[in-house]
Structures are given as structure tokens and as C-alpha cells.
Image (cartoon, rainbow over all chains, first blue to last red; front, side, top):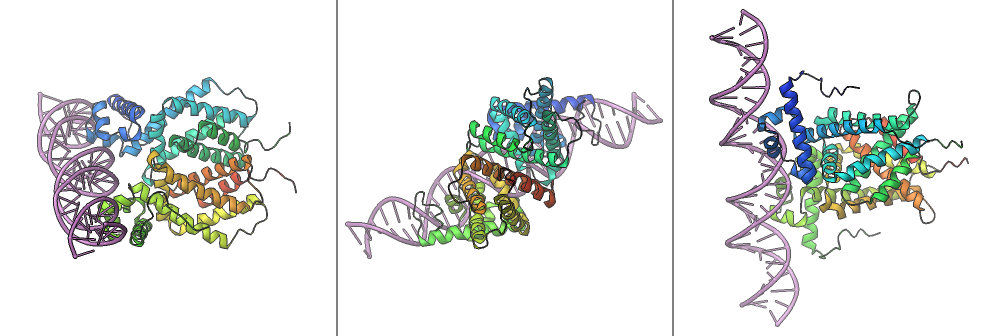
Length: 201
Length: 201
DNA sequence: GCGAGTGCTGGAACCTGTTTCACTTTGACG
DNA sequence: CGTCAAAGTGAAACAGGTTCCAGCACTCGC
């Protein structure tokens, strides 16, 4: 799967692609230092060497920028995960394992995680398309982890959505210091039980 | 249960209590018109007839204010729900029914809901205590709905937490127009299955 | 090479959340 | 009463997200 991020309107010249990448990089860099509030538009512009106006041409708001950053990171994560699929047997366990892995990735860059997560949940309707992309990416990751053979059933898709809800919300809860890792782990394992309808092997 | 909102430090004179109430009222009013962005601190101050500085003395930030507004609304909801407990038999169904009822309340004031939900998920560590209060209130509502007899088991508490996660996240998803009511209903029913360990009656 | 059009730049300006401060009001206490 | 501290007021100032704009710089068709 070649990552076709934004064939939405313009094909973007090479220079422009490079600018976009510089901006995303600056964003991630600033975020990993000081989190959401450190990603200041003027700072991003300066760090990535573009004018403020240009930055806004590429990303119409700070939230758009951070959500795009999240897309980027998720894509990386997805690839990493593909290379090392979960080792567990049961789908539920596989998903839980995958999510906890993702969680550990977040722990490594808590500030970056905070910035992206805040942006994601703070996003209003104007960012819906982008947020939706992130959501689809997450869904893809979970479905991959389940390692299912055919097309997912509606019931499975429901379960996946609920898992996604839990994942996001638990992440936020942890980021704001209201839950421990252990707690998050339990919650994830709990919600993953929705996947395996009690099938006494 | 008499609602002892904030015995944290000062006992608040009557005048102060009135001010606080006026502020919360103004906040809710502005929010129900124009959502999160319409709750502008200067506007709240003016509407409630206090100086900006005073507003900030009562609520140290816009997010604090909106989270407090949510506490307030949740408390009302809780009381309403107590008066008309869910009619279903099974705990899972009771919880689902209750949450859908709450959801319908949100539909009636979508802008207000949007403002409160955005504030809640955007809140950073400095608002943790208040967010925690909201969380406890929500938990109480769900536990009430379950109508359980004794103390909840750890497993039940996990389930409740996951339900809460799902509820918040689904709410946001709906508010930003990325999911339909039907979808939310399905998600809630799905997650509520975690409550009744498959007990074939 | 030349002009049109689009993109980029630098910088000012605007809006709203937040802070600060000098001054007044209120309320409890002697 | 008079006094003092805490709380409230009004207004200015600051900060960071967002918008605007005038001018420069590329690219593409001629």
C-alpha cells in the first residue's frame, strides 16, 4: 500500500511535497518537546523555514496540522506493526497486544502523543475528513491485528469501533494523569473481550 | 445526596454562591446558542454581570468553566434519572437505556453538549480534579442504572470504565458529525454487553 | 525572452483567552 | 463607628491562533 496521503485536489510538486514534509517534521519535533502548547504556528513556520501564510495554506489550522501529524505517525506505526505482527493466537489477545504495543510507542513520546490526542478530540466539524482518515487508519490497524480471514461482520465492526473509542479515551485519560498504565491495560483487555464471542474452543 | 459541589477550600457566602450560579447559567446559555466558541470569557463576564477578573477568580480558565458547567448539568441529569429509573430488566439493557436517554438529552441541546464535551476532552492536567469529578458522576449514573445489589466487583468497574470511554468518545464522534445516532446506539448496545457476562437465563 | 498566474514571503493586524494592577466595595472584628 | 483584609471592578496589556495584504519569485504557454 503506497501511502497516498492527499490526492484530494492538487498533485503537489516535489518542492511542495518537501515543504509539507518539513512542516510535519517541525510539528512533530516541537510537539515531542513541549506537547500541544509548544506547537505554536509561528514556531512551526520558522522551524520548517516557511512563511506563516504558507503554513496556513498547507494546513488551515493548528488542529489540522496536528491531525495530519497523527496520520503520519499512524502510518509509520502501521508499517512497523505489519513487519512484526502480534504473536498471540486468539484475535482478542492479538488486538490487545497490538494496542499495548502502540501504547508503549506513545509512552516513548508522551508529549507528542498528548499533542496529537488533544488535537484529535478537540477537532471540530471542519476537520472531520482528516479525523475520519485517522479513524480509518486505526480501524485498519485493529482489523489487521485480528488477522481475520474474510470480510469482517457488522458485529465485528461494531466491536472494533467500540475498541477504538476505548483506546482513544483511555489514552487521553492516561495522558492527563487520571489513569495508570495498568488501568489502561485492564481497560483494553476488557474491551477486547468483545471480539471473541465466548467460543469455548 | 445533597450536592456538595466545592467544599474544597472556602465556604462561599450567599452572594458568592449567587455569582457562581449566574456565571454557570451564562456559560450554559451562551454554549447552547453557539457552542464552545460562543462561550467567550468576556461575554460570560458581561452576561453574568461580573468583572473579567472575578470570573477568572471563580473559574481559572474557560475549560474549567465548561467542565464545571458539565458537572452542573450532569447533576441535574442524575436527579432526573433517579426519578425515572430505567424500565428494563437486565443490567446491560438498563445501562444502554439510560445512556440513550442521556443521549437524547444531548440531542436537545447539541451546542451545549458540544461545548462541554470539547472542554472535557481538551482539558489538560490542571483540570484533572474537576474532570475526575465528572467522571465519578458518570460512573455513579451508570452504576445506578445497573441497579446492582451489593458492591460492584472489579470486573464490573472495568466494564463501567470502558462504557464510559465509549460513551464519551461516541458522543464526540456524533457531535462532529462523523457518526449517526443509529451508529451511536449500536456502539452503546455493543459495549453494554460487557456488563452481563453471558448468563443464559 | 515575455507576460499571466499561481505560490511564497514578510509583516501588520485582529480576535479571544489570560494576566496584571490600581482602585473600590464588602464584611468581619475590635 | 473605624480599620483591615479579602473580594470585586475596570481597563490595559500580553500571548498565540488566524487573517490579510503588498510585493517578489517561480512556472508554463507563447
